[in-house]
Structure formats: C-alpha cells, structure tokens
Length: 316
Ligand SMILES: [Zn+2]
Image (cartoon, rainbow, N blue to C red; front, side):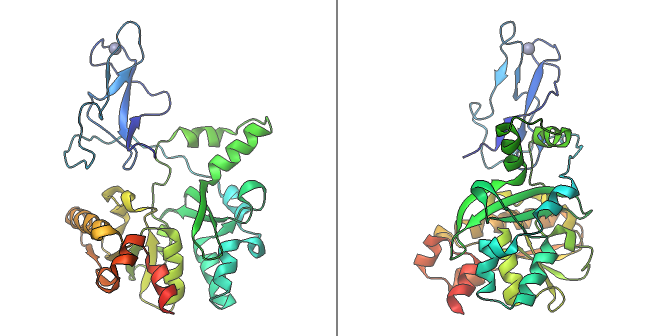
C-alpha cells in the first residue's frame, strides 16, 4: 500500500518555516500532484533544526475535504514515443489479447489494439503481459501500465514499463538514461485518463468512464467502438484516482461513470460524490454515475467487486 501524501521527490527545496534556511522538503498529494499546506514538510538540517510535520501525525483527514492545497509548478516529463513503439508487437504471446481472441472477431480485437496502442512485454518475468499506455490529449505518453492476466483475464501481476526498464538497466549495470531519471523524479506517474488521446478524434461522443483500462477495452468490444457507437470508453486507472485534475479534459462533454461493484455500494457512493464535485467545477460538462450494475447485481457479486466486463462475460 502506498501513501497518498508523501515528501516530494527530487531536489526542490523551500525555506523552512522554523529555521528559514532553504532546506525544506514539502509534502505532496500523490493523486493530484499538488502541495499540501506549507507547514507540512521536513527540514533537511536534521541536526540543527529538526522541523518535521507529517500530515498523518497531524491528524490530517484522509478524505481531503479541506482545502489547503496550492498547485505545484508542473514540468511534466513524458515517456519517449520510441519506448511506446517497442511494445507494439508480440501479440501472439499476449495472454490478454489471446483471451480476447477467444471471444471476439480478430478484426475487432485488432481495432482496439490500434485504437488504444495496446502492446506486449516480450521478455523476462512479465513476458506475455499486456501494456496499457496512458496517452494524453496532446498525444504525450504519461505512463505505461503493465498487467499480467490469467486465462480468465483476471489480474495476476501489475507493474509499470518505466520500472521494468529501470530494473533491467540496474541489473545489467547499465546507465540509466536522462529521460528516465527525470521521469522517475515525478511523484505522479498516471496523470491522465486512459484513452484520453481519443477525445480530439471524437469531439461529440459521449464518454463512458470506468475504473480500469481492461474494462474500457471490454466495453468497447461489447458495446461498439466509437466508429459504431456514440461512446468513447476511458478509464481513470483505479477507483481512488478519480479526481478533478484528471477530468479537466472532459470540459464540454457528457460523461457517464460506471464504477466497479463493491461492498455496500461504497465505490458507487464515493464516485457519486466526486462526480458531483467535478461537474460543479467544469464548464458545460455533465457527470452522471450509472446505477445499472448496482441495481442488477446480487449481494455476492457486489462483495466480489465485479466490473462491467465481468458482468458482460457472465451474461453472454
Ligand atoms: Zn529548518
């Protein structure tokens, strides 16, 4: 489990609220990439000053309803396109793709592969895993998630391509390229929606927003690609990363959110609250959370946390 709030990575220092020296590292919210209030941080003059105010020890509420954020200057570092290109192969060894081919026509599977730039890990311990690139509205690659699935397309292992590349280089005692050093210094890696690059291609389509890339892929296959339907399917990455920052690109759009099932409908309620908040801050956007799954699912299915893809797989 990683923490939502942590000390900022990298070498940026601020003036310490106690000793006034420029040795102060601030806490950031890793989900939004914003700073917490100035008082939260650690002075690096550990012997002389010892100032350290940890937001968790200070009793800061995890559900961040309080506004003590200021935004962090952003100079995003992206994953080079050449790295994305190296993943666009090896589909015959890709477990996820092979599972799709068992259920959908080849042409349709090829269509989702090229639409979302799905790829394959072709060597080492994640061999056969699928890559889900998070490409933003300006076609920058922000992150490449790597997932190993079983024969039922349920997740076995999860990683990120930049960590796999880095570990490989370290193991081989090779130097780490500058882009990767800079990229790794960033606290927030998955900083856009999965499928975001499709927004400009289909400016008038409705948006179906789900938790995981896998669900976006299945929904495209079950319900029709943007060429056949009025929907583009996007994913936030996971349930807790639905936030305003990521949804800014959905200005002027009609969005329907489909959270996975959960115990007592907790995720549904969480997303309903967030959707309302996001909509109120966005120009001309509507955010509605669908209760279709909540209404149809049995208690057991809710406990199991089924997503829309699981649901279709059961029905069809
Ligand atoms: Zn200090």
